[in-house]
Image (cartoon, rainbow, N blue to C red):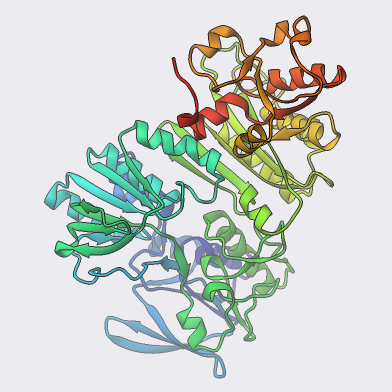
Length: 551
């Protein structure tokens, strides 16, 4: 009878265990979990802080008893594997101060990742600094809230978890300051897309400080000192500056490590040591778009990897194809999601890149309740390969990014996006879905129908002598306008074309980019030199409102 030991539960480990049981009924399967809970919803932890998830037990997905009853798994919480002897195929396990040794035929490592804590002066003496990785972490935060009734909280790190914690602490009635070392919140997104979320956080009363990091704690954690010397008072601090692979056990066993200490595995998830496998947040994966090594700490890939490693151990060959890093976050009323690479990453990789921004509705605009979705598509302007996408909006963001993530995984290009057929009825979508429209916009760039500039390129184009032509209606200008822009409403453009100079370069803009594209086509066919401001006024107003004039 084959004996399989799994180190660590949650997504990767428990997926491996239950799949393996379905394939090998007679195998002996033991799961050692160093924490008290082997299967819990770590992505749901922030929502218990606010009470949106109203019962702690709802975070506990499975118990050892339930897993034994259904799958005959030997689940042992609070058992920490402290040593691996790969030569004799044994593990040493610590439980309540005592040590036992277990043999194995196959060993699966699913240790996950631990919160990264940068070196900060005074951290060891701080009494109210927390991370959010597991249920015990959550319990400490809730105990602090119940005992102290904090009035002020600081969240260090404005990634996905940091934003979720900021939102839920704010819902709890606590004044929240969010600190991010990068120039903008949500570093996985490009600056202009993250601006929508940053604005939403600010509008809902969260103080956002970017381009700063915490360098010291004072007064036992009650004061935080930032890089520029600013001091913030806080009753509790949540550290959310990222994670790093929990790979010390593997390293001590002689397993080869790679990028940032991640465990190296082959396409079958086997490590450098025979019969030792690894899955989840601790392993190095291939970015499926670039083929480069990556660390992608997300629940969906971990679940998939757990299932696949079980298949391989059971003799069903299943290759690790890599990941693209699809993720989503809610910030109060706004949602942001992304898949694949952002424009900055593509540029840094030295790949040919183009981007388009489109503004659409989550369902038919004439049907009540329609809300805006801003969608950014990043692609190769030569081949049409889709590098990635980002979207922000109130509703329907998940649907569009999931579609594009599927397109990337399936090897589709921007040529295919207009061809995708979606369900349509007014309450659910549009006859021209935002994904279709992003494909059309990208094709216009690739086929030379349109030439665009990005929001961050506008100033340099104007400095070189271009004139900004705004084709919005006069009533729209009352809400805000570009300084020194020439205004000719689109419907008047053909009749007023004589006011323009064919020797002059123009940048054309409207609210979203749709009317300005029409204007661009009119003017180009008349012999004018014109480029379209991608994303137009709506995008520029979100990311650089200080450069505009408001009446």
